Amino acid sequence: MLLSLKNLFLMAAFIGWLTFTEPVVAQADVYSEMSFRKISTSEMAEFNRQFRNVEWTGLGFQQATALDRLPTIEFRARLQQKFGDPTRTLDDLIRRPGFRMAEAIQFEYIIIVDERYPLLIMDVDGPFAGVILAGSPAFADFMPEVKRALTHQLVGLDELAEFEDVFFSPERRKWFRVQYKDGEFVNEEISRPSRFSNINLN
Image 1 (cartoon, helix red, strand yellow):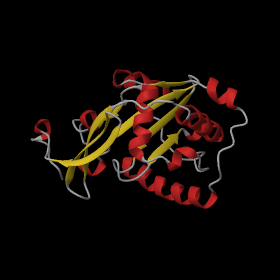
Image 2 (cartoon, rainbow, N blue to C red):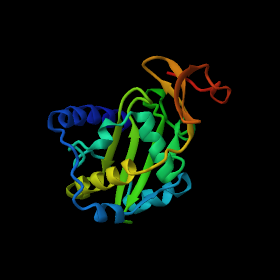
Image 3 (cartoon, helix red, strand yellow):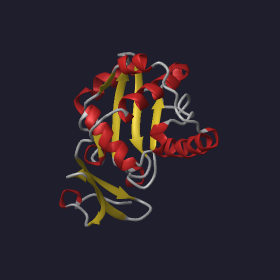
Image 4 (tube, rainbow, N blue to C red):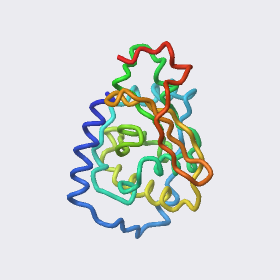
């Protein structure tokens, strides 16, 4: 599922590049009022029951906005400011039964929009590529509005929040520390963290 979403992102990014226009926020009050609530890791079982393990799709998110121009590391800091810690990071995913390191990501936010619409926000390749937005096919027609509202609320933030993630790049076979701290963005190669010493990297 994660790999197919990454492929979906690459196609959508190309389409967005062809069709990019500056976002027009004529309904700023509506976009400000749209609610976004993060699902915590402990709430995922209830989320899956409510949405019956939704099949994520990028339909509705193709039109580019200012979010598409944000470096992933800044996008992550804005998400931290808006929602706090991710729903799941590599630490959460790596110990799931059947998880493969080829599916490694840096972060994943599961959001409920207006208490009705599920939204997934996740990186494609840690800090090295972009971010995926995905939703339920049942609500694809509403997703352009969701993306514009999310753009309005994230880009409008006056401050960024500090964070620190660990990311493993399967293609590079390397570990990285990705963080925003003391006003600086950091993406640096590190040794394998000791807590992952017994993890099979294949």
